[in-house]
Length: 430
Image: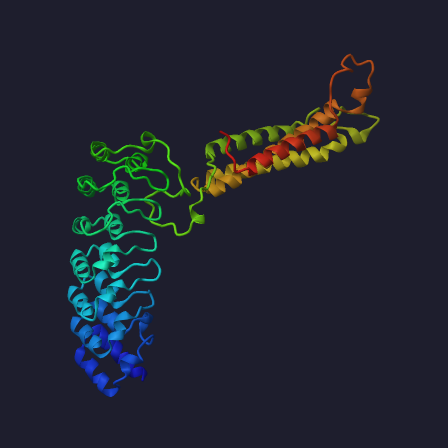
C-alpha cells in the first residue's frame, strides 16, 4: 500500500494522468485513503494545483471532488495554492466544481483564495475569482482587512483599480481603524493616493484608533522624496490634521504605528502602554560622576586618618571612621562597581535601542547613587555627630544644628522610599 501512495505522490508531482488511472485500477479507493499519507499533509490535488497540472487536477476532481475542500498542513486548499502560484487554468478547473471553494478560508489569518491572489498580485486570478464568487469581495481577514486593504498594502495598483467600484465601502477600516488611504499614504504610493483622492466617496479626513488622519500619517512618517507632493495632494482634496479637525472621544488606543504589519485582535491588546524612554548618554554621565566621587572617597575617606601615636601603635594610620568604616566601605564600593558596570555595558555591550535594557540600567544607576549617598551619610555621621563634638561645652559651635547617624540614615531611607515609589509609578508628571 505504501508503494501505491509513493507512486501516487510522484504522479502528482509529474502531473501524469495515465499513472493516476493505472493506480486507480489497482485500487479504486486509493484517493479516499490518501489523506495525510503524502508529504506535509498535501493530497494529490494540492500538489498538482501548486505545480499547475490542470489535466491531473481535472481527473482527480472527477474521481474524488471532496479533495478540493481539504486543507493541507499549512491550512491551504488547492485553490489557495493555484491562486498563489498564478495557475489560471488550474483555477478554472477547480471552480468548475463550485464557487463555494472561493469561500474556504485559511485558518491563521482568515485569508480566502482571493486574498492570496491579491497579496501575490495575480490580477488575472483576481478577476477569475471575483467573476466566480462576488461574495468573496466583501469578506474580511482576521485582522479586519478588506480586499482593498490588501491590494494597497501589497502595492497592487491594478487590483485597486479593478476592485474600487465593486466594494461596498471604500472607507472601511481595519482593526486599527486605518482606511485604504491611511495605508497608501503610509507606504507613499503616489499613484494609488492620486487615484483614491479623485474618488468623491473617499474620506480624506478619516481617523484611525490613534486619531491620526492620512495627513498625520504622512507628517509622522520618515521623510522621503515626494512627501511634499503627497501633502499638497491631500491638502488640495481637503485633508487636515487631527489637531485642525478638533478633539474627538477615542476608544481604546493602540500604541502600534498604523502601518505596522501586524494586526490587533483583542480589545485588551489595544490598551495604551506608556513606556519611559531613557537617554544612554545621560546614564553614562551619571555613572561617570558616581565612579569619580566614590573612587576619590575610597582613597581619601572623610576626616582622613588618625595621626601616629607612639603610645597606641594599633591606631597608627587608621581612618577616623572607627566602627563606621565597614558601612562606609560597603556603600562606597557598591556604588563604585555598580556605576562602572553601567559604563562598561553602555560602551561595549548594550544595544542602545532596547528600552527594557535601558530601564534596567536606570535601576542600577539608582542603587549606585543610593549607595554613594549612604556612604556620604556614614562620613557625615562620624565627622559631625560624634559624642566628643556634641558634648564639648567650650566649643563655640556647640549650639550648631547636627543630626545623629540613625537620624541621617532614617532621612535617607525616607528619600530612598520616595524615589523608588516615583520610579515604579506609571503616572507621568505633566
